[in-house]
Length: 131
Ligand code: CDP
Image 1: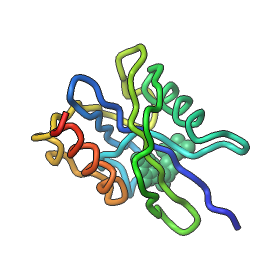
Image 2: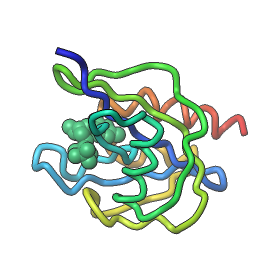
Image 3: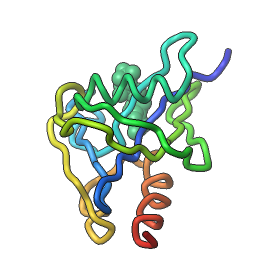
Image 4: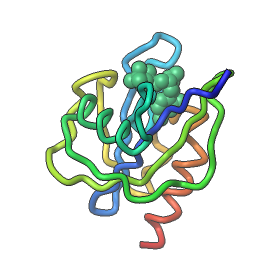
């Protein structure tokens, strides 16, 4: 069986990273993640990410660069992360989330990130500090 890919976006704007608090399912609700979701059949990862960010946050966004690495979520699912630039819109928690926060590098660990998102978050925070 082939792996299912989940794509997530490290949306960066004015030196801060967007964190999204999950509202479901119960075991993940309240934890924070980089917004994204599963690829649909035949979809390219970057296209899926643009679609997910439009659906979940109501923004038009552009994937910029893949963060090196792939992280296993549960058997058969892997997470890939891109840095993302906002083209238009103000992110709103329209779907899957109940709160959004923009975090500067010194605030990045004030939220309880999903374990599987932490390596990518650490890399993005390192880049924000250098910028
Ligand atoms: O929106 P969609 O139903 O396609 O996907 P989702 O429910 O948001 O995410 C699919 C799976 O990926 C869930 O098990 C999430 O917990 C996981 N995920 C994650 O681990 N890290 C993220 N940044 C995004 C999703």
